[in-house]
Amino acid sequence: MKRVTGIGGMFFKSEDPDAQKEWYKNHLGIPTDQYGWTFWWRDENGKKCSTQWSPMDDDTTYFSPSKKQFMFNFRVDDLFALLAVLKEEGVTIVGKVEEYSYGKFGWILDPEGNKIELWEPIDSEFLKEE
Image (cartoon, rainbow, N blue to C red; front, side, top):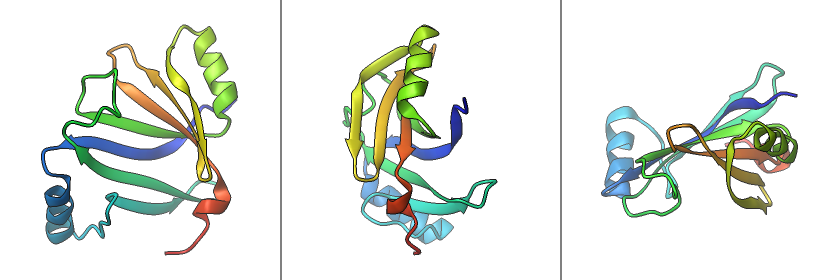
């Protein structure tokens, strides 16, 4: 079973997310929007994929129970199967799977307590061209 297929997102806490987005836009040319930046790429099979870069409010609880300032999101092919294997391997699962029109999400903790988001995208939502 393939586990991680790519990076789905990089999320980090910021004292002023809007100022951060503006700085990255002005100085690095990143075309930010209200969520940050979605950049598009193709995997080894030519399938269109996206990765999200997002500064978030410093007081967000989205990363809980992790106390870290960041959270990675990894793309996966089969979230339920992967979570079952990870549970058997003794990995801490956080919360319950959430499903949206753009994919399924689950969360785990690494050995240092970093919360990791696992995302099984629904391709049809991400095939649109910019």
